[in-house]
Image (cartoon, rainbow, N blue to C red; front, side, top):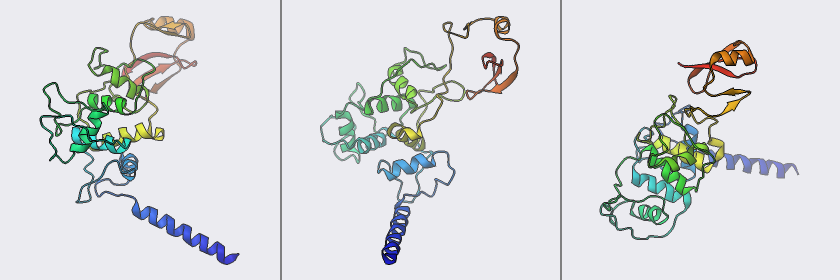
Amino acid sequence: MKKTFVALLSTSLLFVSISVADAQTFHDVSEGYWAEEEIHYISDEGIIRGFSDGNFRPGQEITRSQTAVMLSRALNLEGSGSANFNDVDESHGNYEAIQQVNEAGIMTGRSNGDFNPGEPLNRAQMSAVLTRAFELEADRSVQFRDLSPLHYAYDEIAPVVTNFISTGKGDGSYAPQEHVSRAQFSVFMARAINEEYRPEHTNETFYGDEGSFAGVQLGDSEQRLVNLHGHPEKTMQSVYGFECTFTMMIIPITCNTA
């Protein structure tokens, strides 16, 4: 019995050692890097790889063709349909992945017949491809200071936000035209695949003239708030970058930009 226990323990230790050794590491993704966990998770899943020099290049912009490869791997896409893009022929290194995501309806080309494989992916496009790839739906509207419901990608941005895959900036904007880095797209992919990586806040800008809470309507004066709930008791810093004054009932009375 004692020999059996020792043998089992030795086997377990060997298994752990092998698993740790096989984990992908990158020279330029140090311990504590903001996207370290998500990068390693996506890498271990075989969805993204580093470069031959051992670096990941987290700050480098991710291109449309690289995005196609990651989505193809994540979804285990098959097939080799022909989309006949003007700028992507069979000699292109990511030709097959581009054909697969196009056939799946995840990534399409331009009206002129180009795919623009080397073009950097922006946040609006990122939102669109993830919404399509993971068949996301929005359960409400979203509000950002730079995003109108008339924006061409609004209906595909809303699902990634309400599902906590992508968030706005600290200033309440979404920055739809901002380019996405390899680290950022790794984070978005990790969140789409594994809910454990999703954040708690979306950094939206909430505004409007409808809605109420505890007898208070949006747009009511500060004096009405005081009459209903008393004078402020404390000031707190909001997660959205605002300084808010609260009553004992924890109802915001005034919020000023920091």
